[in-house]
Length: 411
Ligand SMILES: CC(C)(CO)C(=O)C(=O)O
Image (cartoon, rainbow, N blue to C red):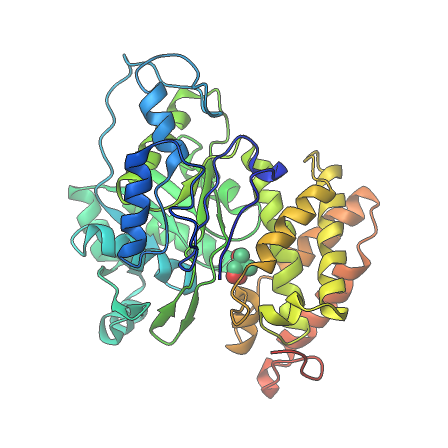
């Protein structure tokens, strides 16, 4: 499978874009400026790491750091050389060890080792994780598991440079309270949660100087028991709340240097809010359609009712987003549809994984949000109302063992 993000995409204007999956045979998959980066990209593939170097930010860092002028190649204003040098990122705490948190634990642990990458959880979960010995794509995940108390003790001596949140939205308030002692004055905070509001919740507690805006996209990670797999680790799209704020920009550049150093793919779109809403277009469509039509990605790749319903729901998000002041168009719908169409046909979105595991879903973040905002703006959202009702029905029937609202379709 090859996953590509369209270079002409409205959602990634002015960003270099990479082909990011393992079977991509295009020779590095970047738009290609620097031989050394191409080389690094190919080395990553040779090691089976499924992703190339982050060309754009490297380019940005080379060209703008210390020069005091806006970078001519990308949207980031540059930092002045007289600003204090940044302490490199050396240790990471990951809060949340579902399919996404565990995928990042697998990637970061492989690049940085267990003395620098920590998965932090409550005592019961930590004991379970220690006993389970999780794997990512067949390799042991190389991290250290800590309880919140153990992590707080460690942070008192050596604060974490990054805390990455990968819990479900409903678990975020409690995770924030439990993990607050991990956050020091220079800790960068990244949320890979779906939806458009987790960063605001984090910023209320920790401030925008620490919290980056982030969209985790294009990955197809799956966790069954302690086995985590991903054909494609995707890309992190990163940005800041206020591009004029030097502290926020410095935070982003520090994280960008780290991701570049460990070869984790990322982009910095010009308009991160647009990107966040774009990902919502994707999730509202594919996550809900696969849950309601009881299928993996192949079920919505094929023409038919499930695909039509997915696209209708995506268009409703674009309409509501426009009313919210985000310039989403039919081009954005087409861009995210293209990404969906390149997801592993046998993969499952997170909401469908939740349904199969009979866990509460993120329906409130998806159709819940769109129906509420649609009503406030007087925009009809009939498809999302249908999805919402069907998923709520599924959730309420978990106790009877049901994981489907309709006869099976393509699987
Ligand atoms: C992009 C996608 C659909 C990948 O699985 C996702 O974000 C999710 O499952 O929540």
